[in-house]
Image (cartoon, rainbow, N blue to C red):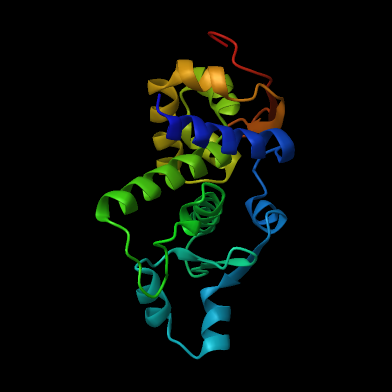
Length: 211
């Protein structure tokens, strides 16, 4: 495990420990709690008279980007995609801020000077951290035995692809994640897929081997 891994765990763990008590995670509320102004592409177009293509081109992505002036910062996001994609974009941009990527001295939306290696590193870290925030390890380890990732995706209000990526990470790095992540209870309800028995409570109490 690298120092960057430890820093990532520390940041995500702090957010979950302090602010996450139930699922799905209120990612919009967390962004605002950490000082972000949330601005949809539609709002940005209305305020700036730029086209959606102009805005997406500035950031190099169709999903969203962060504007960081240190004391003030904003997440500009595409509001014409699915809700799960918006949630992941907000979580990813929040992590770019909290992992200090957007405060890199080479970061400038108009003239970024990152190397491709740095860009790839920052993207991978922010995506990994976003997945850990939206699909907390405690919940995954508690529900893993069922093997129903689509149900877990619904529980966390994320895409199945997001859950699969998180599951691969959690299985591959289980020992270090167990050692570095909070064991707090996160309240959640897992519905029966056939709809016959009603909601079934899932207690995400901790990392219990084989549970």
